[in-house]
Amino acid sequence: MAAEISRRHFFKFAGATALACGAVNAEDLFGHVPSASAAVLEVKAKAFKCGILKTQTQYMLKDTRVGTPMDIPVTFFVISHGKDWVAFDTGNNAMVAKDPVAYWGEAVTKAYYPVMKDYEEFQVQVQKIGLKPKDFKAVILSHGHLDHAGAIDNFKGTDVPIYLQGKELEIIKKAVATGERSAYIPADFAAIDQLNIKPVDGLFDVFGDQTVIAFPTPGHTDGHQSLFVKQTNGKALILAADAMYTIENMRDAIPPGLAMNIPTATQGLYVFKVMSYIGASVVPSHDPGYWETKALSPKDFEA
Ligand SMILES: [Zn+2]
Image (cartoon, rainbow, N blue to C red):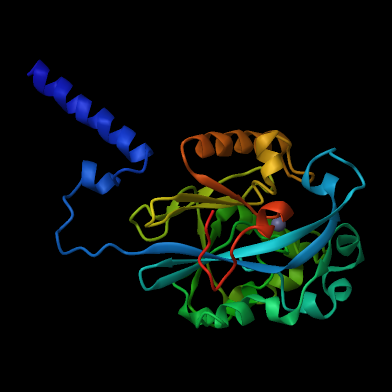
């Protein structure tokens, strides 16, 4: 009996270790034996750039190189899972390419001046890989800020579910109710009642197979989330969004220049660092140097 228990414990421990290393998936270990006919679905990511924001270093890296100009890319992702497609963030609204000061307002564009072309808008870019908004299985929003949720209006009138943390939805609703423009632009959410918004609380396993999982990373905003993507090539991506603007934030534990909760945001950076030690590629949202070297859509993203 004792031998049986310790043997079972050994396998449990070995299994958990293998799981953490990405060697196997939990279902193989703790659940059902996968059927021989179950097809392995290919999971990979494509990255997109939606123009740049002209800003200053201290807005990205708190109290760092104050006053130094910094041009940061705006990014969003499309993940393929077999034949299904999921968007992670959407970039700026189409209006930003036309008249940014009119759309975002003077105060916002003073700190973050966007330079964006019409063809960098979400819908125009995904069309180039053969997708229309209605073709998406889901949209995951990291948070409601203007450079992440700006093009969510593309999903107006579709039944594509849009997942965000319930806490973030509350913040968005409050921001919209004030009518004032901040990092949340009320006009971005003008059609919110015509969107299939699905608030989630905590971890959200998009396909139920542990390959694409949204998880809370509060700090930058209280309802911020990042996306774990376990690609079929074995490489785990952590699409941090604004929980990690740049690699320097993580490397030197420098909190973001703007955050609802600075200590919580900094804690998140420590967690990302440890994730990188165990082999995950933590992907920053706005790091100019990092993104200069990365392949964009239609090429597959390689961390
Ligand atoms: Zn951002």
